[in-house]
Length: 219
Image (tube, rainbow, N blue to C red; front, top):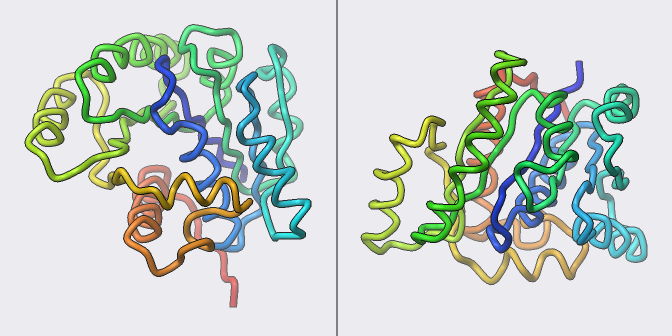
C-alpha cells in the first residue's frame, strides 16, 4: 500500500524542499520504493534528482507534476511504497490543494520566527479545508532551523494552539542540510553520523509512527 506525504507551506524559505528531499532519501535508504514529486515551479527537488543521477547515486525516482497533480498522482504512485510531494510555496495553490486531497499526511515546516508563525495560519487553513473533505488526512507541524534559544520554546508553545499537532522531532539550523542538496544525497547518507542526520531519522521515525507505516527488511 502506498503512503503519500506532502510537504507544504505558504511561506518561502522554510526549508520545505530540503525536508522533502531528505525524507525521500531516508526512506530510500530504509529499503522502500520511493517517488519524489516536485510540484514546485522552483524545481529544487527535480534539480537535486538530476545531480544524483549525474553522480550515479542511489536516489529516489524524481518527477515533476503540475496543476493536474490530483488527477495524475494516484496512478503514478501505484508502483511505490512512499511518495513525497514537494508542494509549491503557496498554500492555496491548485497544486497544493490537489496534493492535500490525495495525501495521507501533510507536514508544514515552520522556523522559530514570528513571520513564519504568522504565515503558517494560511497553510493550516488549507489543511483543515482538505480534512473537511478527507477526514483521514493527517496534518502536523515540523519545527525547522531551530536553535536552543527561548524563541524556539515560545514557538512550540504558540503553535500548540494552532490547530495541528507539533511533532516532537525537529531539525536544527545546520549547514549540513544545505550541503547535502548540492551533493545529490540525503543528509543520512551524506553525513550519516552527524547530529543533523540523527534529527532527520527521528523525524522519519515519528512520521512512520503517525501513519503506522510498515518497515521493510533491508538485510
